[in-house]
Every structure is written in C-alpha cells, then in structure tokens.
Image (cartoon, rainbow, N blue to C red):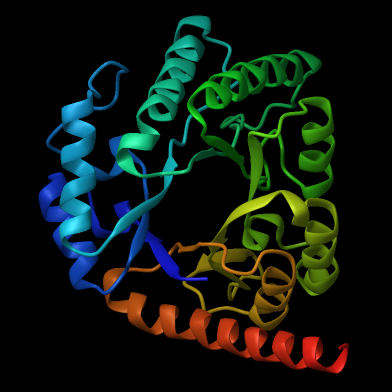
Length: 287
C-alpha cells in the first residue's frame, strides 16, 4: 500500500524535471494528469501522444524510481457544449490508448460538476452514462481500467450515487477511486465514521486506487481541505477498511505542498502499518 502523490503538486514542469523532483522527494509512484503536470508538451487538445513520447515519459520517471500508477484527467463528461464534450471524450480515450506504454493500469476521473451551481437534470445523467459506457468499451479493448470517483457537488457526488451508477453502467473495466475526503462536508463531518463505512460497504469490492486528503472545519465553521494529518478525518478507520477490502492498493496523496509532503506521508504510512498489524492479529485469532 505504497503512498504516492499527485504529480502536479510539484507544479507544471517539463516532464524530465518533474520526474526528477518526484523521485527526489522519495515517492515511488504518481497520479499523472498530463495537461496539469507537464509543461513542455501541450496536451490540452487530443492528438499529441505517440508511442515514442509515451515511452520517453515513462522512462524518465523510471530513471528516478517512479512509476505512473494512475493517469488523471479532470474532464467534464456531460458538458452542454457538444463539441467540447466530444473533445473531452477523445482526450480520455487517448490516455486509455497510451496507458500501457506509460505503465499505468487505469485512467481516473470525477465525471464533472456544474460550476455555476445549477441543478443536475435527467439529460446530464443520460449523457454521462452514455459517455462512460463508451469509455469502458475503449478501456476493454486496451486492457485498462476506468477509475470513477465520487465527489461532493459533482453529478456523482455520494457513495450511493456511484454505487447506483456502477449498476447502471455494468463493466468489469470500471473501478472505483475511493476518497472519503470527497464525501465529507460541513453538514456531515460529525458523522464521518458512518459516511466512511458506508462508502466501503457499497464500493469496497470495486476499489482500484485510493486518494488521501484531510478535512476539518475552518474558524468560520466551513469545511476545508488540508494535507493528510492536518485535519480531523478518521485515518485510522480509513486505513483499517482499506486494508480489509483492498490490501496493497496504491494510495495517492493530495492537497499537500512540497514542504508538507514528508510529514503527511509518514502520517498515512503510520496508520497503514497499524492497520496491517491489526489485520494480521485478527487473521491469527480466526485460524
């Protein structure tokens, strides 16, 4: 259950420099969103990837002891602009096609949200189901997983909604990127244990990667995102359930600035090791 990091937390850099910085920080894997993390190739439109470039990027990271565990995309899959929607789909498909050469087993995404706060419609749900079916079909051709993540205020915003969505778009090539921090908000932080347990009960068997951020209430009483170990999220419970459902799954750290990363990684790993030891004791007792 190695702790990795979002590559773009180091800034948007030439990929050789980025790989060196990640390796120097002691991480062994990353979630790489090319258009957020790489500055020397313009990935904002589909079509720039090619086998030589993909292999070169993967090799640079490998030189520094880093693998690419997840390709991230941060794209909107039910946007009203049909031309932009198709462009987003093609960008995701391009990552699917080159994931193998980059060494990544999955391409992950939240499905998107209405930035203006307008209510979601049946049209939005219909479109996102059609898009994800299309992406899953492409992923099946290339032997890659599509990782879906629920997030507050997004169309798929809760564990219940994601579980329902997985039933409506059945595919063995769709998995879950679990992130309890994305499910917590001002109104439910006090019930976080219940929220976290529900997420694992509904989604645990489908988890293929995990995100790690922290949450707490600000001085004004509003929830805010902070690095792991700097907030009030129950990491003991999170790691316990992660070890129970998906031992060895990759964890990708979020929200930390470079000077906070080492402390946050130690915090996550401390809870991970404790959860592993508890699981081993439980296994011995039940033999």
